[in-house]
Length: 502
Image (cartoon, rainbow, N blue to C red):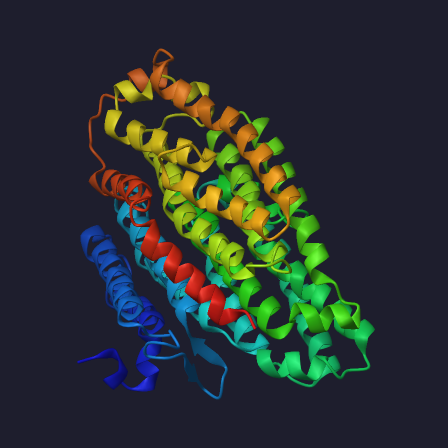
């Protein structure tokens, strides 16, 4: 049956599949609360996420959400919309979720509450998929909270680990504060425009007399989005949460959750707060985003360069990558803005695979009880050459070296900024990328050049974590495969940006 013959609500099939999988896992847990059947639980979660991924891929190929194909689909009176951008980001979310659930099969060995763990991942993924389709500030906030509440519990999942519980509590307190700021900003925008639906907000804002209230509301909404994307100065929760959380959850939050924040930023600020009309009102949010991008890139990379632990280095480097992605939004006032915005989306696609793979390698090291510092990774390639080769791919790709996917996405992003007239943004990004090569290469040096330490020498490879290996290898292959496949990816991203822009 062709996609256009399906009922309209079927456009939300990826989100519905993720939600249904979560409910199935809760039913399994209700029947057998002490179940530790890892194949059943991990298999159910992986099957649900892969099915959602397959449906999303099918919709993209079939032209769903493309005005020249099956068309953009609006649901519930315009509260939700399914277009190319929502499907592209849902592809990122479901891909990362699949890798995380596969990797968790080994990581959760001897842990309790596994059904709840997988169910929370599925609920968080449902929130992400809904965020990608949210076309109203109300649906943005509801899906934002569905993701956030699930994430707080996942960070604190290791109940016997003081660091995990402490990280979860800090993440919850800071997240609650940011939610309050975000919803207060929404209320101010509503007070000024009388609407929460994004296109109606844009229309009403043009004639409002409450410019000051509107401007403050826009600034507070930007602060809420900056928290979710871990952008400076709202980034301080990220290193603590990523370090304390189970490593697969760190991968999940730093890749998929960050992309969810960006899809909200792209849709809300471009559709509800159109640049030209807001500039005429004196609300220059683009300037604020430009400052945010520069500061986030620079501080994130400099902080990453000073870390002694690999996991914290990856946490701060993810802050730096948030700054790169912000270039897509910061340069939209120039010509060919659809190219630079699409390039920002492309970078998030590649980042979803290479950053997830890097954190899953850390999960592999934690599985073997290897320490967390760079020195603890010395000689690990002698015990795990395949995984170390994959980690090398992730490090060089994150740094932006050819011939990996990260090079292509950064090159197109920086060239897009130059063509849009924002050469200084591209220059700051290039300098920061050069700096990042220093700390990424420290991991590669430790893996391949240094002699094995005592922890590594004692690994003995007594057990092979098949799930972790499989997820790492898939992430590495995709980081490579995205380079020859960049034509279709870039075409989809630019199409998504073109549809979004006025």
